Amino acid sequence: MATLDFEKQFIELDVAIREMQNLAYEWGDNVRQEYRRLKKKRTKMFNDTYNKLTPWQRTQLARHPDRPYTLDYISQIFSDFIELHGDRKFADDAAIIGGLAKLNGRGVMLIGHQKGRGTKENISRNFGMANPEGFRKALRLMKLAERFHKPVITFIDTPGAYPGIGAEERGQAEAIARNIYEMMVLRVPIISIIVGEGGSGGALALGVSDRLLILEHSIYSVISPEACAAILWKDHTKAPEVAGALRLTAQDLSKHKIVDEIVKEPIGGAHRNFDMIAHKMRRAIVRHLQKISLIPIEKLLSQRYQRYRDYGEYQEPTD
Image (cartoon, rainbow, N blue to C red; front, side, top):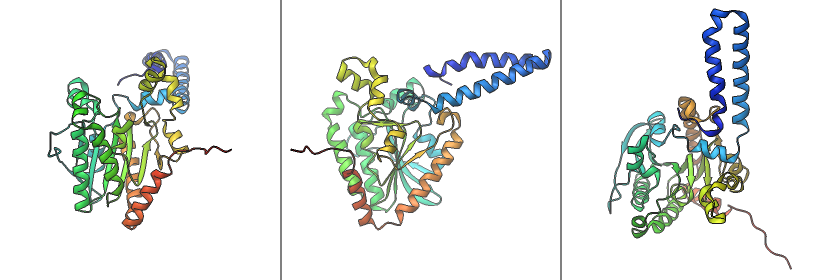
C-alpha cells in the first residue's frame, strides 16, 4: 500500500510493534505490556491524525493510488453491468466509462471517470482526464437513458478535462458546456457521487444532478491547488496553503450547501476497507434514488435548475 507524507509517522511505530509482538511470548509480561502500550499509542495517533486532516492532506488522500475507482464501485454495488463504447463521432475515450446495469433489480445508466492502476493503464486512461469524445460518449449514454427512462448515476474522479491541443481542436470547451446544458434538462433522475478528485469542468460535465454525494475525503473544486498556486504566485509549491482557501473539502462543501450528503469513509480512507465504503455508498444511492424517483419530472427539473441558481454567495453594493 502506498504511503502518503503525513502517514510516514506510523511506519517506525509499526516496525516497533511487530518486533514487540515477535518477542512478547519469549520475553514475558514486561514485553507484552510494552506491546499493548504501543498498540494503544498507535491507535490513538492514527485516529487523531485522520480526524484532524488539513485540506491539503485530504487532497492527498483523495488522490491516493490505492483508492477505489469507478469500476471498483460498479462491480461491488451493481449487477449485470454492460459497458457501452464510443461517441459515434470520433473515438472511444477510456478515461470515461459507462453502460447499463441493475440496482436492486432496477435498470440504471452508469457513467464515470476511470483512472488506471499502474503506469500502462494510467496512460491508456489518460489519468482520468477526458477528451471531448469522452464527454460526448457520456452525453450519448445520458440521452439513451432518457429515451428508455433509466435513472443516471455518475461517478466523478478526475483532475480535470484534458487540456491538450488535440482536445481543444476537437471542441473541449463546447463538449463540457453541452453536457452541463443537457444534464440540466435531462428528463430522468440524476445522482452524482464524488469518489476522489472533482476537478474543474471535467468534473462538472458529469456533475449536474438532482443529488450530489461526496465521500468524506474527496475534493471538489473549480481548479486544482497546484494550478491555482501557479496562476496566482507562479509557484506550485504553495498548493498546501491554497487548498484551504479553495474550500474544496467535503466538510466545506456541505457547509456551503454544494453537496447533499457526505458518505463517511473508514478511518484512514476508502482504500482501507472497500467493502465498508461500497456498502455505505450503495445504501446512500438507493435512499436518494427512491426519494427523487417519487418527484414528478417537471418539478424535479425545476428543483435541479434552482439548485444551481442558488450556488454561491454575493453582496450587492450599497450607496
